[in-house]
Length: 225
Image 1 (cartoon, rainbow, N blue to C red):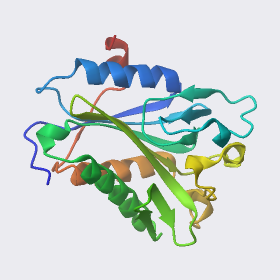
Image 2 (cartoon, rainbow, N blue to C red; image 1 turned 90 degrees about the vertical axis):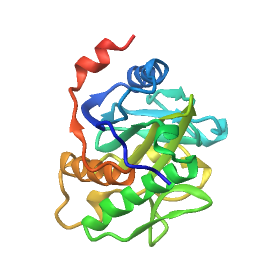
Image 3 (cartoon, rainbow, N blue to C red; image 1 turned 180 degrees about the vertical axis):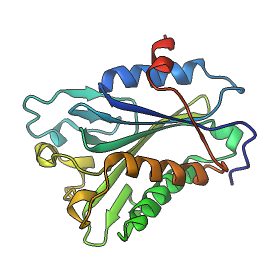
């Protein structure tokens, strides 16, 4: 069970970013951190890209076309990132928080479920396939993590208001399930920043923090080598 942290949690809103750039910065952040480094959550959108996790099979990439495919060291299979989808990178010290990997996955999924409940949408995780699913079986959010030196990086993807057609070019996570998004199931869709803010609050609480600080965006990335 996680404990009450004694240092601040930083949340950074990074806008729309290239996947390779952020991937490199995440790894650099993880390599450089020590026991005194604050935990962070990076919230952003990505330019269109397919990413292939460690369990990803080539046959799950059906016809990528002009969208690049990038191999990633996260867990999971093949997924799609694009504008209108929230990506949240969870950069936390699991040993310091006394969290197990399964607990981290569960609290991320619960934060997504609670965010959807805020907009009167019922959803739940699946024990056999990490992520969050609607009652009709459609998938609205995906998870993929990497743990190194007792710390996590990578995180979640949450479909809010994006072009869903690229999902048809892959077999998402090897499940063959249809993908959906928030904008298609609520009458008055919120903007993506509103959803990011709500999700950040639920992730903060799930990690055991009483609140978080908003950190700077691009400068922190430029300082990481």
